[in-house]
Image (cartoon, rainbow, N blue to C red):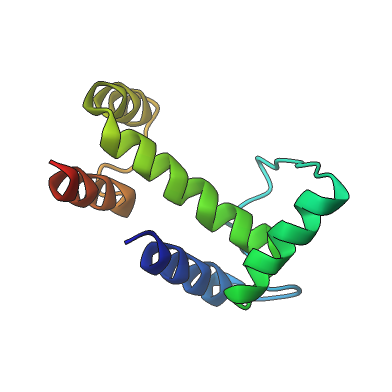
Length: 110
């Protein structure tokens, strides 16, 4: 379940990158960056996980962040519906594939 989503997300992110390091294209991001700090042991563990998927730490962080959010939203219908309503209210795309993934996981769990 989660691994296939992460693998697909990693492949999508890597294929979207047109120049420079593998990752999201400059056109797709730059309005929102997150800086994450790790202890040396956490960094080593995280790098080992990213290496398993054959990707950079930033691409892996993006994939697992959304995978985790999808799991959380799938486990809480109230949170999901409030989040989706806010997203759509702000002009988000109603056909965002994350909604399909959330709904699929809701069906699997319930």
